[in-house]
Image 1 (tube, rainbow, N blue to C red):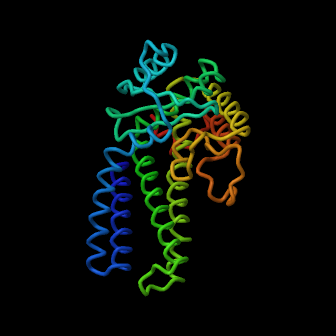
Image 2: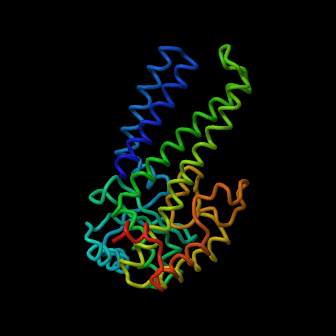
Image 3: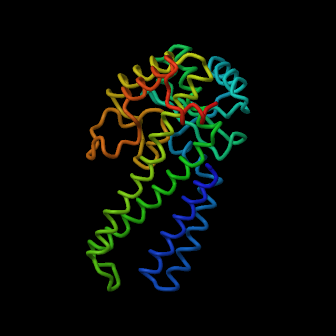
Length: 290
């Protein structure tokens, strides 16, 4: 199912580029759009994870450099029947984490220094189990590809807005260009929201099943909520915010409020984990992570 969704997203990007290329340049423009989409799809599939890690200046970690983190993740990988992923540290005090990579054999988890300092071993284990749940069910591929697509859409929207403002539209209707410049980022937000919200609930359930302790993740989420209201992850962008375990914009008020949140609220996630503790979790989430 995840492979089908990935193909759908990549195909949608190709269609978007071809349509826009045709609108601005006719047949030649459509061909250029198709070539650009092919190149971006190839890059998104094979290299978007590396681009993401570079964006956050993530540094690879060896077992000797951080035995605590290696012990926790290697033990969890064994429990989840996964290869041990590559591990990265982000030199950032705001606590957060994400997973990336196109499949379990090429997975990586990145964690901020602040998270390691502020959470105890049980809470770090719960957060890393959440990320490994994303890895196990290949959520990180579709999320990383979605981040690349959102970035491409933002770039197109900015170019169109610039062209409409300064008259560089070669006879095209500036009203149409402005409308597209406004609607394209909205479409990107809807894609990210649709992908991220349900997957966070499912990864929370996966964390509870791997560790056997839903309360560990509940404690971790409460701490992350508290600390993230004090600041945001440096360099965080709307295009890749959905990859993190909690929103990297915790300290900021976003203009669209609840409507375009990429994450469920912490209260919703804690309540869903409470249902797991009582054995009343929603069936779709149970099936997905058995």
